Image (tube, rainbow, N blue to C red; front, side, top):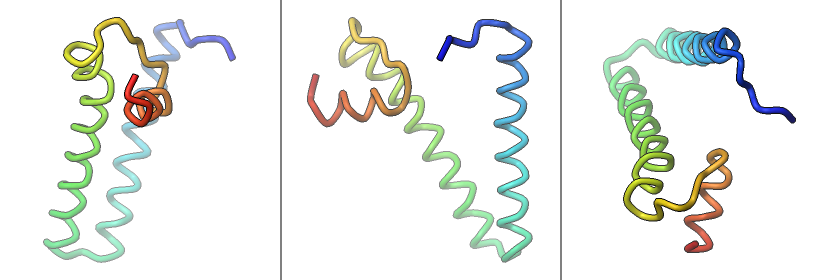
Amino acid sequence: MKDLTDVRWIKLKGILFLFIGVVASALLVFEAPTLKVGLLLALAIWAFCRAYYFAFYVIEKYVDPKFRFSGLGSAVCYLLRGK
């Protein structure tokens, strides 16, 4: 598959990811509208964002600056292999 290079499509992709996240989060909170559910959902979102940041920024900048990851799968393989 060819890399996505058109800026308009990249922006649309980002907007769609945001839309999916907002709708899924709203549906979860509407399913069980409690403070506990809202806080756990916010904590899970924050933790996944930090894990994503770790996978692509921290590893590339501080662990192995020569390695470039193509996605979360390659980051996981890198961490499991140790190289």
